[in-house]
Every structure is written in C-alpha cells, then in structure tokens.
Length: 239
Image 1 (cartoon, rainbow, N blue to C red):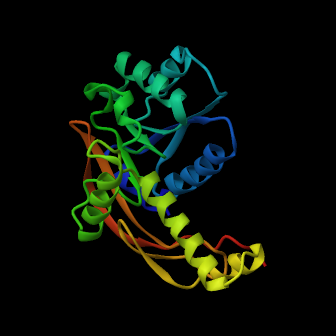
Image 2: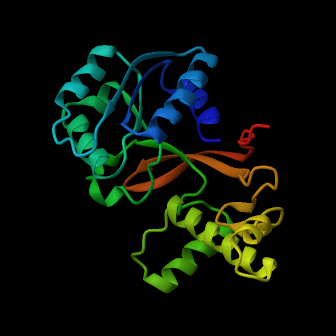
C-alpha cells in the first residue's frame, strides 16, 4: 500500500536511482523487496542496498557508500534511535544536498529528535498526518490533545494503534464472549472512522484497505504533497 504508489512518485519528482538502507530484520528487508520491484517497474535502478544491526553509532562508511553510488533517492527504513543517529550524520556530511531522503516508517514521532535543518525536506508515505486538512483528521487531533495535552504528538502510529484498539473492542462486543477465535472472526467486515477516512478489516485476510498520503517535513511539520486516496492492499493469504 505504501510502496507501490510512493516509489513511482519519488522516481517522477526526484530521480530514478535508489539506494536502500534498512535495519537488519524482516520488515525493512521485505519492504525493500517491494521497493526494488516498484522501482524497476517504474524504470528506476537500485544502485546500492545495505542493512545495519541495531545499536550502530558510526555510519560514516554507509554515508560514503551512498554518496559514491550517485543515488538520487535514499529509501531509509532504519528504525528507532538508530535512524535518528544515521540522519544526523547523513545531513552533517551534506547527504541531503545530493540525495533526496525518503523515509519509510517516518512520522511526527521522529521530528523532536532532529533539528529543523535535519528534518527539513524528508519525504514519507503514511495513512495519516496531524496537519491533514480533513474534518476527521482535525477531530482526531483535537480528541487526542484534549486527553493528553496540547503538546501531544498525534502521528500515523497513534492513529493506527487507536484504530486497532477500537476494532478489538468492537470485536469483543460483537463476539459477545471473551474467546480468541470468536473475537478474531468478529473484527472484520464493518467500517470505523479513522483520522483519514473509513477503515475496515477485510474478512478474507484481516488486512485493511487504507487512505494513503505522501508528505514532506517543512519547518518541523508534515505537509501534504499528495493525497492518494484509497489504496487497496494486496491479498495477504495464500490458498
């Protein structure tokens, strides 16, 4: 859902050569498999790919490889504090002047860990951003900040976790009993309002078709670049 519309957008606006850099575990590797496929389908090329173990403090060699590759776009799926450490070093070395930073899994949660210069221009894809100009987005942000204070960060992750909790609660109600299998069977097929449109879990594989946006950080806020609308997830279950 994220990769298939995001990579052609990157290729169209920033360049057709990609360097992939992720944390060394299953999510970044699977995401980058999809990135590679989407990039090649869009006429782009992968000019480098690397993975890092958790806890690395010095990314000098990786920053140098990215520069030497000539990549126009860096697709980053390093996670957590390691991502902050890398971005600081990448920016300090002048990486953003040569290569567009496209960060998968990035959200408002990361912005406080970066300076304005470090976060400026980072582009990402998500289901929700707190600045989204839609009634349901404004209502969700207001609801969270009423409960947790005006400085509360309302990110894509907050929206996603809140929605999954609501599906679970509604599933328990519909099941009428605290039974794992009955609850699992009861969470699908009905819509709930998210911070960006209606969401439902599909009965056939319990995955969600989601509204997707592409955003860029400007002055330490996420700014909408493109509203992609509803993007259907590929079928996740094999028969």
